[in-house]
Length: 446
Image 1 (cartoon, rainbow, N blue to C red):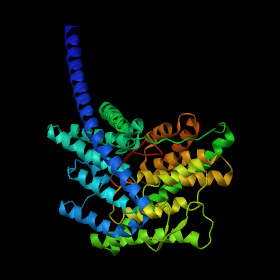
Image 2 (image 1 turned 180 degrees about the vertical axis):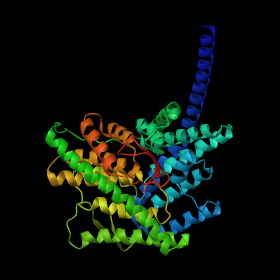
Image 3 (image 1 turned 90 degrees about the vertical axis):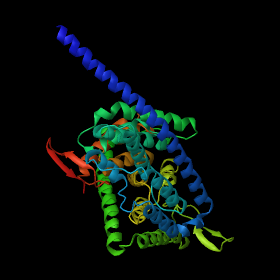
Image 4 (image 1 turned 120 degrees about the vertical axis):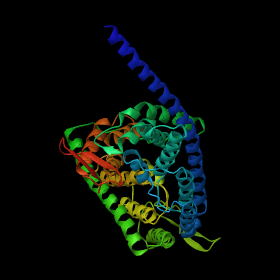
């Protein structure tokens, strides 16, 4: 009896010490990365505003690409694997250099200033992961605790930038290894996400949210419609992954020099932007695209470059006007692939949301079923399909759209997770357990 009590006391002391340790370092990570995240948030806001005010900046995109390649060369990080390196560091013990943080910070701002099509949350994962890893090394954590610090940093940065602390806390634990969750990181990830979110809100960052209006009643008919949309979203997510990976192989095969690759990629994005703008000039009736004569510079440019940048304007339009150009989802995929595969920096997550929202809105308009709800479902389903993270996808839907549409999100995300197969954005992501059987497979995504 005495031995049992003694053993209990010793175990409880260990648990208490470990808990206090992780609470302390989670708060530290949340504060540090929260302020870095808010700096990145306002930096993105500034460069996006400049690009909207001066749309001719897009013609300098190839020069921006050369600057990005030069920065990575200058800091000896030419073989940067981006988010894949962060994921590999957790399950393969690869080293994340601290220089990744300033590099991804500056290069993502350059990409967005000159009109590249990319996101920001992928950059946040790299920012948070590299800073978290550096903190682990600074305090001489062992290998496993360093992995926890990386996940902690990822959660903090994601939360600070996108304003969804619940989803951010789970995403870093879920995205690394599909089929298992690193619950040992739960407390630090939750605390870091909440602290970073609190700092971001106190500094004026506005969390993302969208109004769906009145939702249709859940019934067998609506469930079937959402089920059909979910399967189609899974196919869209596969297509997006294939386009991204194929574009990367294409660039590397035909343009082996990184500087040439960035310059050509910038030129392709410019050509695509002008081509999309010319559709309206040719008489096509497209609600999202318009052209305007800027007499001061003597050029005809599109007044709102919807497919450049993150795509948040397109997402907002899905919920405000419930009307999108039918090929908007495909154009966003092409723009994003042309940008990221050429070596420009950013992320794929917000473009994924844009693809899902525009496709869902199109589906709702075609079948006559709540385009805004279908846009919300599309966002969650496509995100789940490309990241293989169903719990995070569900939590994002709750935080962005509220709990009222829960049955729709639940069906959509479950079906998309199953029907998207083993495709994924991140080649370093591991599928530990099969999606179809209780079977250990331990394979990488396609």
